[in-house]
Image (cartoon, rainbow, N blue to C red; front, top):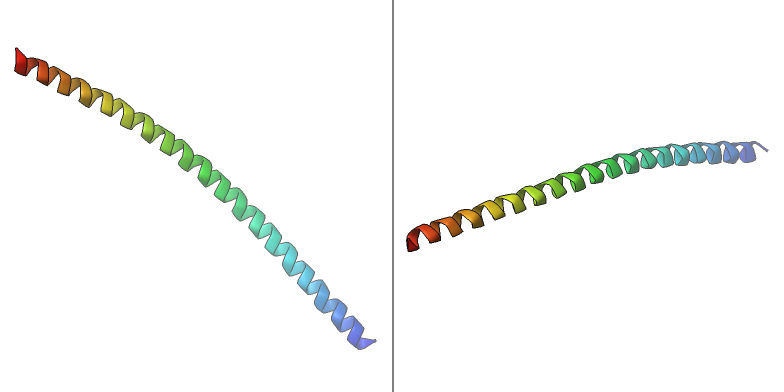
Length: 70
């Protein structure tokens, strides 16, 4: 009987550890999703900024070339 109680207690401890692990993983997952959203937004902003700069540089090159020809 004592062996059964010991095994039940051990199983209860393992279940509690598993629950804690699931909660921790859920929290980590939520944090990672938030980080992913932030990084995705930052990436989008950087791509947009890069495109604006590219257009400006191309415009300057075009103006310089037209000045050379004049």
